[in-house]
Image 1: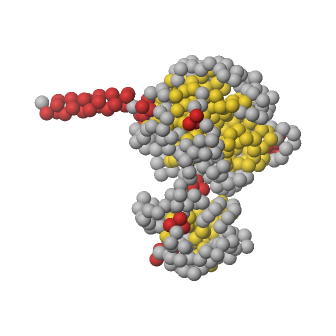
Image 2 (image 1 turned 60 degrees about the vertical axis):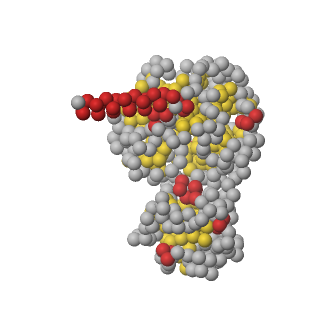
Amino acid sequence: MKPTLTLLTALLLASLAALHAADAPSLQPPQHLGPPRADHAVTNRAFTGIPSMAVAPKGRLWATWYAGATPGEDLNNYVVLSTSGDDGKTWNEVLVADPDAGGPVRSFDPELWVSPDGRMFFFWAQMEKGRRDVELGVWCIETSEPDTARPAWSKPRRIGDGVMMCKPLALSSGEWVLPISKWKGHDNSAQMIVSNDRGKTWSLRGGCNVPKDVRQFDEHMFVERKDGSPWLLVRTTYGIGESVSTDGGKTWPELKPSSILHTPSRFFIRRLASGNLLLVKHGPLDSRTSRSHLTAYVSKDDGKTWGGGLMLDERLGVSYPDGQQTPDGLIRLIYDYNRVLDRNILMAAFREEDVAAGKDVSGAVKLRQLVSKATGGQEKPKPSTAPVHANADGKPMRTTQPGTLTSADVKPQPLNPGAKLFADRGYIVAELPAALKNAHFLPIAMNGQKTLKCERAGTVFFLTPVLDRNRDTTAQALMDQGFEKVALPEIPLFNPGSTGNFCTLFQKDSTAGETILIGKWAVPVFFP
C-alpha cells in the first residue's frame, strides 16, 4: 500500500501545482490592453528600450518597445505600440499592454512582424515575479488593417512557454517560424516553433542546445539558406553561436562559435529582396566591441563572407537593432540608446547599395531619427550607503595567465596607494586589497568613451562601481563584453568617505588584439 500512497501523493501534488500555474497572473490576458493611461506617459518613464518595428504594406510605420516608471528591467515594465503615418516624422502611441499596473507581472521583449498575407502580428512576453518557466510565455494579437492608424485587433492569446524577441520567418515551404527561447536552465533552449496554417496554431519542430556555460538569453534568429537549410544564429557569452539543421529544423548540431565576432547582445540578420543577407552588429567584422558602433554589412554568398560597412550610430549605449526592408528597397532599422539615461528609441533608413559602399550613395540615408524620448519616472539610483558589498556571488579571481592592456599615449603605472588614477581628475588611490598587490593600471580619462586593446592574451581586470553605488558605472558595458564580477569585497578606491566610489573588480580572459570599450568610469588593471 505504501508505494500506492506515494504515487497518489505525487499525483495530487502535481495536480495542485498545475492548478496553481493555471491561476498564475502571468497566464492571464493583460489587465490593460488599450490606449496609454496617464501613468504610461512618456514623461513618467525612467526606462525605455528593446524595440522592434514593422512597415505595413502601404507604408504605415509601427514601432514597439517596453518601458517603466523605474530605471530598469523590473515588474513595472509594460509594452508600448506606436505608429507613424508620415514616414516617421511624427509618432503616436496607440496601445499599451500592461499586465497589472506595477504588480507582480511584467510585459517585455515585444516584436512586430508583417506576415506574407499582409497581416501584422504584435508579440510580447509576460513574466511573474519568482518566475517558473511554465508561467513565462509569448502572447500575441494580430490585425488585418495595419495601414490604418487605429486598426481592429484580435483577442490576445498565449502561443506558448518562453520568450520571443526576434523576427519570425516565412520559409519557402510556406511554413512560418517563430524563434522562441526557454532561456536558462533548459537544454535545446533555442527553439523553432512552426505554423502550417498561417499562424492559427503553432507547434515545436525542434531546438538547438545552447551549452549552459555560454548561454545567456539566446535571442536567436533563423535564416533560410539558399539550399533550403535553416541556419540558426544565437547570442552567447562569447558573442554569436551558430548551427545548421539538415532536416528542416527537427534536429540541430551542437552550437559552435560563429565567425561573426560580436559582443554578447542582440544583432539583426535578414534576407534582402536581392537575395543577399543584411547583418547589423556592433563594431567591425574582425573584432568584438561594446554596445557601440552599430554597423550594417551585406553578404553576397549566403553569410560565408561579409562586406561593406555602413555606420549607423557609433555612440556607446546603442543596442538591439530590428528592422524591415520594404518593396521599394528601403531598409528601416530601429534601436535604443541609453535606456535609463537618454531613453531614446531611434530609427535609421538606408538602402543596400549604401551598406555595400559604406556611405550614402543612394541619397536615402537618414540616421538617428527620433521615435521616442522618455523622461521622468522615479529618480535614478543614488549612491548606496550600505555596508561594503562582499560580492560573494562573483567568480574566483584568476591570475595564473595574466594579460596586458594598452591605450593610445597612456603608459601603465603601478597600482599603489597615492597613485593618480585618471588623466582628467586629481583622484588618488586610497586603499587596495592584497589581491591587487603588484598590479598595474592605465591612468586614462574618467570621462568620455575609450577604446583599449589587449596586447598579451590572458586575464585582464577593471575596477568600477556597480549601479547601486554610482549611476556613472561601466559595469553593464563590461558585462556585455564578457567580463564577470570577481568574488572580492568592494574596494574604497578613492575618497573612501564617499561610498559612491566603492569599486567592484571585473575580470575577463581576453585574446591578443581584442578591443574593449568603456565609458564613464572604470580603471583598467592588469598584472605585468
